[in-house]
Image 1 (cartoon, rainbow over the protein chains, first blue to last red):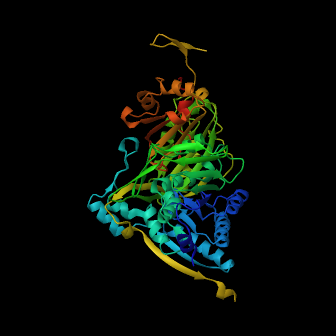
Image 2 (cartoon, rainbow over the protein chains, first blue to last red; image 1 turned 120 degrees about the horizontal axis):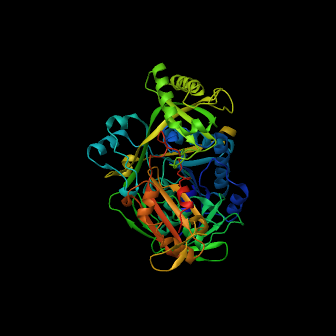
Image 3 (cartoon, rainbow over the protein chains, first blue to last red; image 1 turned 90 degrees about the vertical axis):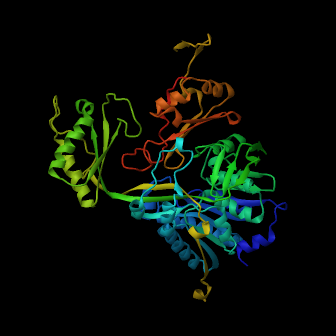
Length: 470
Length: 114
């Protein structure tokens, strides 16, 4: 019998509490061993991991590459897969391979297969594909069912992309929610691996399927999906939640981290525009009545969250397009005269270089010390750092523009110039560096009026490697 | 220390927010929205910030170069926190964006007098 089937048969809300172990909020950057093992000693009913996010920017979704280094992803996957198989409990992994698109899912699947083969185990896998079929997307655009996020006022308005822009998206994914996870869990897997997912689905779907209150399950999921970040001090160690019919209890598996009412309540604010309402694909989680009580100095009991289902599911879709190939030029600048006239100097040099190298390349300046990170009032400084981005269709063109720009800026003459030896300080040469491809988000919208079953494809794979060894 | 006479007729010295709050953090809430969280060590600190001119919607909008209607503020009395959410200037990771995670946009708040 599969791990999910066994749990479905043996566990009922109202009996023993459901022990949920959150192993990682970002699988592939190293799961700390000691806390994870302490979590296993508590005999969790299932183990969850989040592998992705939109946070690291459009590159990963656009390119299909993982943000985490492959060797560490493999190490973390092996840790959680071996643990789940030895305890015979379900392993649930969401947002496979950073952005959860086809290539990310496949790369994660390949690693899991390699590990399973080494462990000569057999297992049933449910795989959720989160790539949105283009026909579904195009129809939604035609019918006006793709719209901007709410609340509009606190969001930058990202226009609904036109047909051409949609076509240019290398990958388009939607975040699948609890209903899709529940459907996948009904196939009785040992491991559920999902493409782009709501973080909450990883931890809330199985409890909901078991009959736990949706509001409690989602609130628990929302807090533990970042593992011990909700503690004082915050950390990345495994986190345990014990869910009952009326409340859940939170405890970090690192004994030096304390889940206090204040630290847990504060976590509800994290990366959330509205601290009271969390929008899920199938409804709204309302935290207004949530209560946080200390059970002891390391554990907090949480209750009171309410879930209001929505009649029509709303999916969040994400897509990125390629902007071009990128080269960067890195240099320092320490002449106050030039620093004072820097924006104009860069414009003048740009004009000269354009005359030498016509074409569709562009230069994007980041002047560190003068507002590269956030707008600063103009003020004199002794030293600034230049990171100049050159973006062109082809890498060769971007590199050429960077090199020519560098030489022209190095010997750029300006009124009052004293430092005629050169305007730039290089930490190393070459100072113009290939920086891969540049992507940008064109889709971060809500998709309405679709049946999740038409968007997400669930596939069951039965793996058996025992014969290979025999 | 500078002191200012407040309209309510009471002399009260202001302090930089960095000395009043125990956490001042910024982060993306999705690639289109920036959210700022302020946590306070005690009720007087929370109330000082909550009631300050500097943290009114209009002042916050000026600070971040936005319209007042684009800024939302939530006062979370039970956990002594204030949340402020606003649109990002550019979508995270767009060419020209300087802070993909939005984690370093708290700077203008540090020296605010509250």
